[in-house]
Image (cartoon, rainbow, N blue to C red):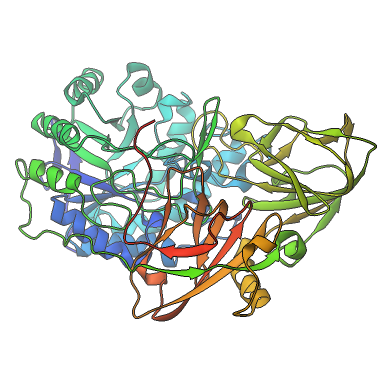
Length: 593
């Protein structure tokens, strides 16, 4: 902690201890970066010329089940803020409760929305009660770290781009009341696109409005100034890149154009938060999705074409932005080192069991009459295996009543017969010989993080019919994917002469091992794999998919070991090349379509 300071909203500027102060911030989500790397990323933000770090808080990460709150390890927000302070920087905290952020369910926990009466992002009593509990826990961490207590936090945001969603002023006022009652004394902000209706709907008197945009900076600052004549101008999300979704392309922005927009923004006297300064990774199953007519799940990489790439290395954009910032604020002489080449090697993947053979060792099976959703099984995400017996003369059509959420592999007696995909609006497949044990392996590919479909249930919604008749008598097994690495190691048992993965039909486990002299960042090439989930040394890296654009998985150095390392793969489809290939650097895919 340092000496307490006073941070305030002045007539035309932010004020720090009574003097004009420009916020030059960058977004860095602690929950998307391995905690052992937080200090490195924060330091590099300072070296680019930033004086502030901004972060969201992901409610569903901290409280995946109601009442089970965690703020340790990779979720230690207090430690993250302390590291920001140790680097001599300020902090902006944006706790939502809704954060969007291309994060699963926009940060809202799935358990909260299982009750259909709960009102999403509005002043409904049960929603407000849960939100109040959550915010008070966050503010227990944030309040003692405010700048007027000698900490780094200078701003706290209320909700997130609310004017694009609703206009419930009572809801916003409740968030303000909880925030102030919890001891937050620094200025409170909102954020919306600089469109008059959004700014009006998403704000309250007493809250300072900020904007989000990535181009036409002067025009958009003028729109914000027209709506809010007094106080500092700030772009709280200066979009310097963009996110990727599976099946699209890797988004990039022109470096010179982005730097010119940043220059125009700073020349206008505005403060800024670069979104993202460092995007990081959607490790595990944390990615969100968009659905504006086409379901589009977000990739594991959240590189965002940011100034600091997914592995924490400075890019051309880093140095271009640094040069711009140096025109308006002091910038350290020191620069971060360039990226080094990652180790290159390969190891064969050896097969473990077929998923169907071990499903009930990965989860607790339940017998139900009608097809349940994931949420009715109290299963927040990942994979559920459903099975029942069918017996129908001649070919028949298997149909999902309403919608597949999000991908379903159908097998009869363990043999694949088809795939149903939400992103292709598929609901029916033809089965040539519908007799035997029907198994449906269903994957939640990420809950929608933006718009009206937030909070919707997952699974095979509307039931399953064969030849027009409802199928019943289901055995449902929600998989605990944390059990996969140990099970894979046990079943393969290190046998050097285990047969290749091509001997297994349908979803299956596979394992590979390799040795390294010392821990370091790695990149696993997944271009020869199908669709699935990968772990290294028990750490879930996330999803891969031959669809692209992403073709490598980033492995942070702190999860790598000196000596033997183990990669485990849950492959839903098939390997074109059953090999773990470590490559020299990232491959995030094609940039044009």
